[in-house]
Length: 233
Image 1 (cartoon, rainbow, N blue to C red):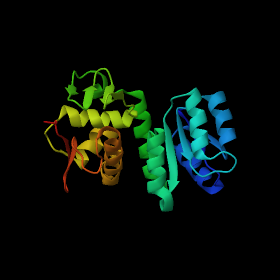
Image 2: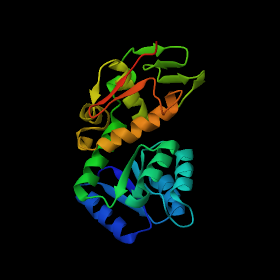
Image 3: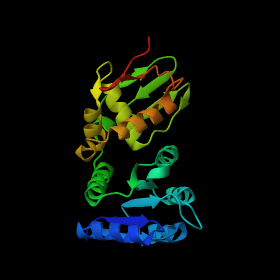
């Protein structure tokens, strides 16, 4: 049997469609309609990935998220509806989301994203652990090999995806990386046309490392092209 995926959602039709799609592709699918059941299944079956809806009865997605994180660091992907997507995505990233999917999601996109997320979780990127890239100024200090980011004298925690994105920009300091280059190298080819993905993660990364995210000093936008890291001073 393939990797185990836990789908947590209180919409039976959606759960059934997702289960059928993933089972057909060889995954073992577990399902839960609320947070309490999800926690029981995480503890008992140790899934490789959790797809977690944010709006549920009894225990919402954010409470469930926190409880799951107390016992495991497996990838958790938030599921959000179109009407609240931006708000939920931002909150999910604040919590440390590994990724997000906006419902309704097509079968091909679902399978592609699941494969990409599992692949990223399984294979650490060379730019995460091998490169001897460092940067330091009066406000920001970064050591890629040590996975250390210090902002204003305090260590900042980045999610694995945020770290890969930041490391790639820093490695190529001064060089503009296009949206497609960032998507392919950080998320995988499955995301190649999802420019909004880059925009949202860049915005969230700026909130963590910039003195003023509205007037970025380090992560600079090249309108219509991409982004680059600019060394201070």
